[in-house]
Length: 124
Figure 1 (cartoon, helix red, strand yellow):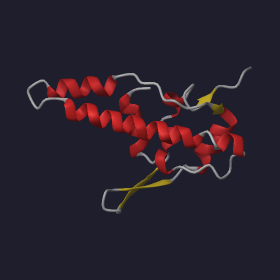
Figure 2: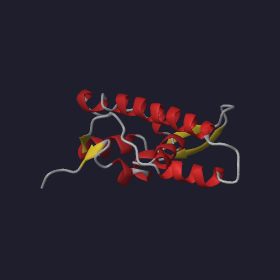
Figure 3: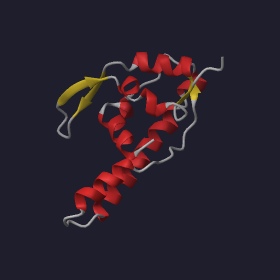
């Protein structure tokens, strides 16, 4: 997963996701996932602040977004992930002032990036 994918998850409402419809053992896996996203966002922010404001800043920021990271979380079954995505298909996202800016489907938008991070493919 890249830093850009972490930002997309955060901006599309993954941190506001709920897991009410999942079995408890699977729902629990959303908690460390959200913690890992928050931690990654903090690290991205710190790294962005360290980039000097010069003519190479844009290139350095672009490289930062492409950087591969590993989230410290456990995978859930695809069945549980599918239920999670269904439950969160219209997550409200608010701006810094609390104004609704839209509703998003964060897990479907990022399902490819989340394979082997939050969910694993069923064995055939």
